[in-house]
Image (cartoon, rainbow, N blue to C red; front, side, top):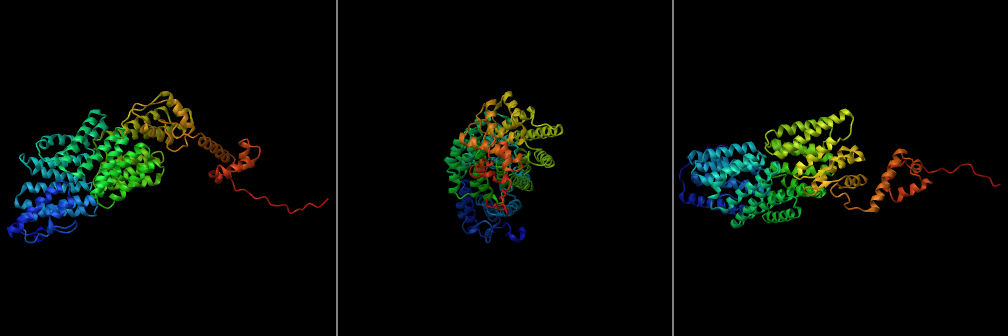
Length: 577
């Protein structure tokens, strides 16, 4: 954009009009900080009306032009995000860049630093973490030690970027540096934002490093964030705190309380007509539902989040929602759809400059689909995940990646030896599942032996799914005994069963019918579809007994039989004697 043609020189052309514009900008900034973005837009009056429309700069001096461009650009980013307006972030970046250039030309370094900070936030919304870091560090370089409030805000934004990129130790270091600046601030909204981001980072580190103290500290920080947001009257940020608090609760296994906080967060965001953050609540809900084993509901919630995030240019959030949807589809056994969705998530994240997001999508594909993918594709996915996550500081992601590597090695060794699932592989699956869930669930040696002794050990994919579902649903410290294995082996065709509660939803009538159906199906397979031969195998005296069952009780098995051939009447008639 040619600034010399689009903007007036830095000269005082109309003092009265310019001063009024600056007052409007100051009021809009205050409202924006309180999360009241639409009111902030209205406060600018005729200077700027809507996202996508260039501000009216005629008659303003250079300083007023720069301020109006900055306010319109920042609001375009916030409103475009909340309403998922296509192209809003690019439009916002153009206005803010123009503003930064004007401030730089005028020698107003601190105002230029604010513009660069807002520019970095736009890049972050798009998922372009590297560009966001560059802008935010440029902003810091222009601030002095005396610029405490501005430094605090910029450090907070930088911590948010590092946290989004799973560089949690870097984020914690930055927040620790910023803590004294926020403690001295009288702005409740800003202090609440600091406490909330610190809680997010501590929560992530507690999962990756198994630090209970970090998890407890995160609860305290979320409480502090809610306190400051309530005092500031900041509905939007209070809703965000509710969403994040719910995420921590479900990771601690308090599912019912987590749902209550998500309900509150969604209600608050919906009241603000904030489509972006409402979608992020839906994505959190999808993760919670997955943890509860309510897979179909999880897929529906994730799909709603993907649909809402698909047009607003927030690629990082879209990739995250797609990854969650892919995991749900895989657990619903819709494997082709799952692979396509996870591939799309990885592509979107990588193209937007978010390698950690792309690596996470590849990692989920390995965890959920490796049993069903060709060996070459599994190896390619592992190499991609390993490369994309090379710089991550998320220990949980690293542990999951190493677990996938062990599974890949075990599978290759077993394939070469012509063997089935081994005790070592069962232990590895249990260890991986516990690492992913953050729980301690123990399978006794006798339980592992029972898995190998019973038909379960012959189906690696089924066994892995059962173990992972068990760990997800089991209570902390649960112990799985061989009796649970034997019960599940009898009921293995029941959807959603696990070792944590092997008698869940038991119906004697249904179980007997299911077992009967499996025997009939196997007999028909061995008899190559012949009902009469299958009836003999099953011990029926007359094949019509089996025919009756197929037509009335086991209709799903009718396609397994060969078509009945209608007997022709003899053309030779008996003569009367």
